[in-house]
Length: 114
Length: 117
Image (cartoon, rainbow over all chains, first blue to last red; front, side, top):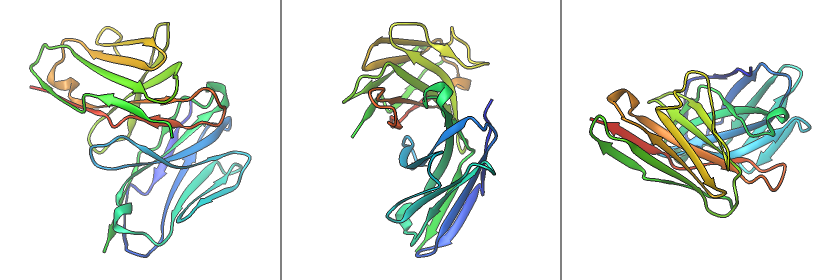
């Protein structure tokens, strides 16, 4: 089955700096990769996703890149703000499960200091 | 946008009690919903896939008789933790996806924090 690894486990940056979180996956059949932000005591919230027919996707300060050959994808947050502080999870899914069953990474705790 | 509502948000009860958690899709019909469990500072672990009108599919190691799932309508799935004990204390989260369109993402509820005394 699919295995998703995520690094780093914690990341501290100064406000205004960029933050990068990286994930690798094992199943070459995976072709949908969402990123979720989870704030304390809440459920995960989708922030951006990418499909395997695209190498990069951007939404304002957030971007995701995908390297299918190397089986890794990354989340980039530019001009970080204190409200970006949260736990971020990457995930992978396969068309064989109808893009439904998600396998999550271990999470990255991002702390943005003012 | 798509919204998934989960209720209650917090439950504290005595050992031996059965607890029911509801998950609703508010603006779409979800033929499939998912139940996750999350321990403090850990990732989400899929417990089971809830299928409308049929039996749930449980992940390996999850006790079917302990975690009863019912998906009686296209907008509601329930998870019942039967005869709960302190080790069942955890954060339970459901998710659903609008199946109408191929590219719809999965949306999560805000979770239920279950504390068993």
